[in-house]
Length: 623
Figure 1 (cartoon, rainbow, N blue to C red):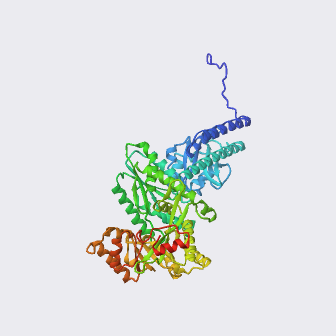
Figure 2 (figure 1 turned 60 degrees about the vertical axis):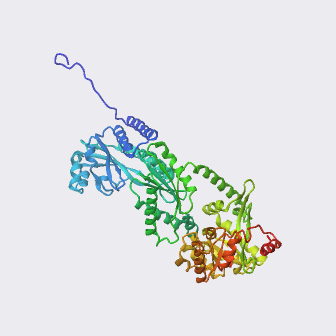
Figure 3 (figure 1 turned 90 degrees about the horizontal axis):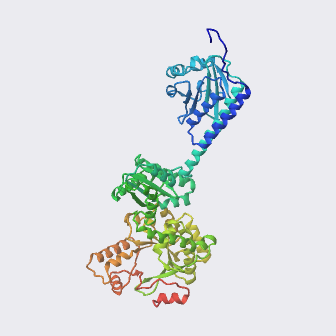
């Protein structure tokens, strides 16, 4: 203006041509996709950026919002431009409610008449927000499109115009649809990442947290005293082998539910490689740890005993403690607990100590060497390398001759020499190798019993007592033409008193096999339960004779205990076999007390018998 008169005109314009809008759409689309690929965005952040891009791509839009499907099944506002988002976030929309516009699967323009009709069906509280902070009464045109992921509407984008009902054209609809497709890809990528992350941190069969997930969880927790328990229940593998994968999974999940109900919210439960892992916050001593473990066992037995009778929840446990000062040690805690677990016997709790590492290295060698030695047996049923059976005599003293033999498994390593059965048999049992190895011993014993015409006893492990065992043994007896009375089967108390094993033992007894209860008195003897077993004999554990000493006396409590056990055996009409006889004085004492059957180094040492001449020498007592 000059002297009150205009001297020129300045105009500001916006290019809204189709070419310009297409270029802006391509630019905004690439920017949106690039941000989603470069960064890890939450679904809410993706929709916020998509809304900003939509307002750029559709310049006629004056405001906008976005809703996202939540885990509760409702849509909620997560992004807004030109509205009070905090107020809108109080509104939930069911998928079938009108304002969610779920009935359409493509971009569509809604007029004020449509919006007013939709809002009338809302309850007064939500309608007040939609028509108040949501300005629904002022919207003349609403451009809405769903974001569809795998056939399901997961979100909605809304663009609003407050002046004209015909503000949006066909190109606006296509561009908003294009952005919705890009958003769908980003949300799908989020879901894939979440699925991958979930699969990395959870056991694929049971859905429980795995060891990696537990490590991740522990790393995020604040430093505090904590105990980590590694629990291994051997009977679970038996359930898996006998009942199948589906039953095994059901048992695992039931176990997890029972234990989780006993744990606190600050504790964590995981399952990995057949081991339950329990992280107990604030637990830093063996006494508290043992108390927690006892509570878990009681809870499991109360809830699962009736449903899963084949489950014996007496796990061996390895425990490691984490001091609060050693934050970095949290990642080493599982390794320490597993080292302790490897040294624990069934039903035993072992606490980690650095000295266990040396023992663990030795046990690792045993695992590898044993697996290599058994490879021929597992691959083709041939004799396992470096394994052989020794024969131990069982002598009736009054006639001075061997009445039966016992087959004992031995392992001779080519470099380290003899390996104690006490070392390799628990590993074979734990790894599930006893079925094959024990089957080979049965075959060897039956073949020799048929060749020599003398009964031979074989020890059976718990894992061998499968329902198919009686049929397999019957087939071997038929092949070698051996009567069942010449195959004596021995089991320990722990194995015999298991309910699942009991049915198999009764079937074997019905087939004519004499059943011996081995190491009687060394476990948890239950006379009431023993009377239910179809036994032919009890073998007293070596501790009975060892407690008598090398020169027994009749007036000691140990001697009175021997007489009491003898009376029990006679009362139950069972033969009583004494193990561990090593001195002449022990032999004379037991003979005077009326015992007539026994084993021990004095009567005959185990030997690898290969010929009838060697057997005859052993039976005469010359070997």
